[in-house]
Length: 330
Image 1: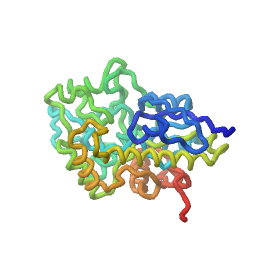
Image 2 (image 1 turned 60 degrees about the vertical axis):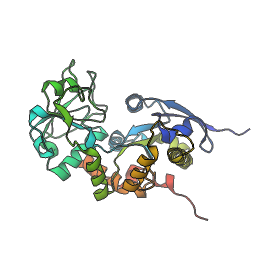
Image 3 (image 1 turned 90 degrees about the vertical axis):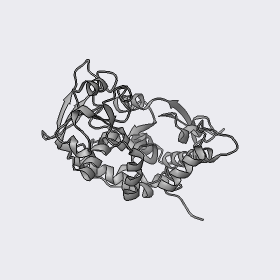
């Protein structure tokens, strides 16, 4: 009888992992129990309670754990979530914000200062638009529900101004009421589309994001796949086995997008969208691996250090396990 190592895996229900979820792809030597959980629940349970053997994890939160004396996780060079984040900055027109530089001196809501989306947004605004991280006053809390705390403790200098919002307040309501001037987030606040004064900072964000990629080669990484370090130390072979399985599941997702006999996704002009994406970002726009994601990883690491969230600027090899994507050549 062949015994397979049982591992739990918590992750969002994404097309790029669906073949792992439904069993079309099985990691070599592993019996994977897939738990399709939302990202906030997964992150909270894994960071607070270490409940899963393998999980999707915020790149920022994971990177911060590397500063601990005994870092609990090892990240694979697998990225289940990417997102251009220019489109996720929302402003209240009554605050006089017409261009990015107008954010200087303003009140900006963000669910958590350490969240990955915010690190990218602050870094891009500082580097490309003259909005230094310290130039705004941040207000942290839930977008739609009150009471959201930071998942990890922060040790920030006094130059970074952060105020948690009240126990009954939400950032969406505060933006609509003019109590804050902008929101940097991952999700869209409910006041967007309902209040005529709320709009995207970058109204033509597809063009802005395509230009950003053309200049930088970065399709921002949001999440990694993290494995409990103790498991990797006991069974080092699982990192390569898992990475191979994630790569095969990603290949199937690419194939599904390009399947033409019948639409697998309910978008009537899917082929045109896929073609335009490949023309803008390249054929393997979501590919895993360390080397072809080095620029994104190390840019994020620099932003995170500049924003006082980690002790130093780490290399890509220090962030993700390079050997997990290393393979032989015949």
